[in-house]
Length: 302
Image 1 (tube, one colour):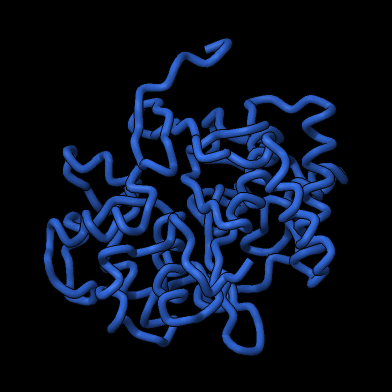
Image 2 (cartoon, one colour):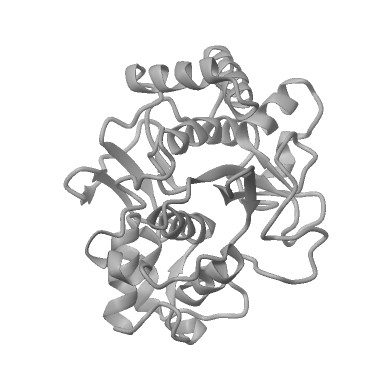
């Protein structure tokens, strides 16, 4: 995949002109992104209740449309935190990726888990940015910005395993299968029943989708995603995780195999439709081509 080209999700569409004058320095760029977005769970910000649906904007074109409907000014012009677009780590990262691609810089989102939030010893699901600076891939977390972190958020340690501040889903799944990590410490948060082995496995599929240009919402489900893991599902994740790690290490054959499998396997590819399990409580089926949502039919066992 050519990571310098926009995908359907990163494409700013009619709002591309807003990206023309954004900073080319990645540190300044991520600061501008934080001026546009507020995390919907930011403990220091109360977003208006009528903006709850911001988190389901999904497409960067819609994120920018939402912003411009409220501000109608350049993205760098200061916005009050409560007047920014509500989103999550995925949105911070994808907007950064969109701006970098607009500048011709290869960039991609990375899906996995971070150990530097809220609860020591817990690894929260998270999305960050990987971009090519001309000589190497640079990992950055555009959501957090400068602060009292044990690393540089704009040039983080590479996700080479489950022991780095940010680890990819593939690395975490592999470590779990080797008995090196406790899957119960990976998920949305302690005490929340959205985590563990099945959650890590689903994120391996999400990591593959993002690598192939389907940068979906973290609460989208499709294909073989499930809230349990059977033997066949674990074996599939083993294969995918091994290929993802090999591709990260520069193995072109692994990268090609991932692309081929994604194109052919209905367990991995959403085929233009996802079920969105929004944090708002709504469940919808979303047609990714028409961008139309409809109430989702009941799921078996729910």
